[in-house]
Image (cartoon, rainbow, N blue to C red; front, top):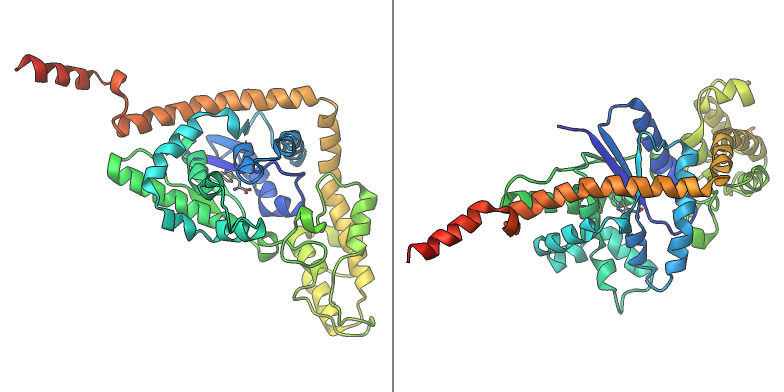
Length: 362
Ligand code: TRP
């Protein structure tokens, strides 16, 4: 079977370091292994509109930002197909048929959708499109016959929903759709990178993000304002690692080679952590190290972004070509789906013959 990777993001803002360690970095690594027959990276604008219906301009403006962030991180249009969801009408058609295979109560149980409904104060009046977006996401994934979907933990319910649709479809209409595998980040810090204030998640509305396109001065300011251990007051005091954002970021970003480069008196992160726990290591020193690490990680991303920013028309052209290629693939899947569902009347000579026979026999 072919190995196909698919994933995507809603274009509602620039991407931040939480997106990077949660999924982007992995995508690029997977892309560069050359193990995949095809890779599709989707800018999910139609999904973004399910809870931004009255703000299309925001979605429109952020398409290019997300595309630039993708290219900046090292997604390579020669190896990965970058596409815009709304430009693939087949996805709507697939969604419409999948809707028959999902119950309202099943959608109501989706924990991610539940949280989002609370966050957006949708309790009293949930837009139908928003409520059903897990079905449309199943269409995104199955349209490209994706086998691997690298995403964050919050997307687990969407993958479960997709698998259920695949099973149901295949059992009712015959083997047609491919079951996808979720690929989660491999460490806890990457799975749930907190905002710089130590709050659960990085989010634009909380103002606690470090963006991939952030300038060095801004990164430094944010690192030095990070939440640590509020009980670690004097340098001699023993420090806690749990909930200590600076150490969570080091878990997510530090590479062994950064010690000889920036902090040669320690061999590795474990030694640094032990010293902090024992006492005698100040927050400032750890923050200076984290700042060096983040600057080293983000510098190549920022400079690649600046290169692409010089040729915005070329970026739109990449998206146009990618969307065109993606549509061809989705159209093939839709053809298979319609054949399986027996709604391919005009391609089905057997059907026409059978119906003719019925009436010539009379
Ligand atoms: N739900 C994803 C997010 O909020 C975006 C998305 C849309 C997606 N379609 C997808 C992710 C298909 C993976 C696969 O970021």
